[in-house]
Length: 329
Ligand code: NAP
Image (cartoon, rainbow, N blue to C red):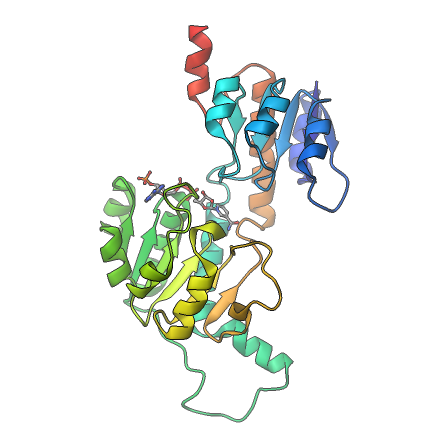
């Protein structure tokens, strides 16, 4: 059986596919495959190993309803019409857990970088502006004993909370739809309303999935309710914040700083005002970009594909209800 892989992934995953007797074709160009190209390739294969940037909408899924399984190389699946995949009987896999440490590290890095204006100060060296010692300029803020607020405390949020509590004794508050019992027991995390999260957080870090409820959630009205001394971090999805409103919030002093691994839109353009603000740190969506995380993502994605092609339940499935449907037909 044949698998199409829409971007080069670490060898670990490709080897697993090969050892399972599958023939893998990898998209060879160094650009994102277009949807018509992806459809054309997928039509000639039994399974697809795709990226989170590939649009898995109703059109794609209906064109490729022959696929026995799709394994995505990411944990987030806001690019997928899950209901349609389920309706068509296509099992769909993702890669949770294995990138939580790497992504939490990036959130922590951005928090520190913003708090000490690190990226801005680095750029000043490059532009020859090291300057004389000035005791009152370019001062950052300290994080010890501050309050970390997490919007969407799940796998990645828990790892960030552990880091912040361990390093800075930060108090953890969070807003989810349900209680995160593990975080409450282990870190004395406290579930609060969204309004309280905005009012009490010194650092507010977003780890929620992008969905109709969370899209554009951080707008001018929301930023206005945050502490003027607070730092906003987003390593989840750029479309959860409204970027023009974030720029305004920083310019007007509604919040103090920001750290972004995800932007709205992506890629961020070089002239974006956020890139020249002192207490802002921006990275180009590198949350899971470690050797360890990417190897494990490749392994999980391949494992999902192999299970699906053998007619077994996927180890990490975003539409497990598909198996209930199976037995009833
Ligand atoms: P997760 O374990 O599912 O955690 C997400 C948390 O958000 C859950 O605990 C969930 O709790 C909460 N939540 C969901 N919808 C909500 C809503 N409407 N209001 C309030 N809380 C809500 O996911 P994860 O593995 O931590 O990953 C989180 C996200 O990070 C992914 O979806 C992905 O978009 C992003 N990500 C980015 C990178 C990167 O490269 N920057 C890498 C990996 C992941 P309840 O169900 O109780 O509400």
